[in-house]
Length: 201
Picture (cartoon, rainbow, N blue to C red):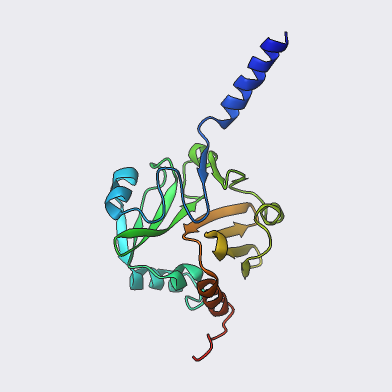
């Protein structure tokens, strides 16, 4: 009886975990990671639907009302951004930011993705989409740059962990993954996000 029960529990455990995709801050997925070449990117995600250079992407952010002088996505810098149909790639990746022909950052967006696929994704093996801010802070901590974009939206910038998050009234809706920042670089970006000019400027 004990043996049958053990097998039953094992089957349930495997079934629950089957198909789950983990994305790790500062790294990426097992098969799609920060630092890989654009050639590898296209091999995994397929052909992008469009591409923008830095100035074009920056203008898009401005047109949506963002202060690009304080947005970490812009402050981190990149050469170009490739836009994908994230209903068709298993990682639900929407945008990939590239610098010197290598992946520098990518964005997973809840609202544009296939509902069944997005449910499988976990940040750091623990955080699914639509997780609320207090739960996220318990797991990742409160050592982050928090920007209130509106009454219903917060951005959390965990630069030292290589994670950027967008949270609205429904919970987590966007994940940005990038290389973990060194203390000096993190300090510079945090100051810019706060509107403080670096020393000497």
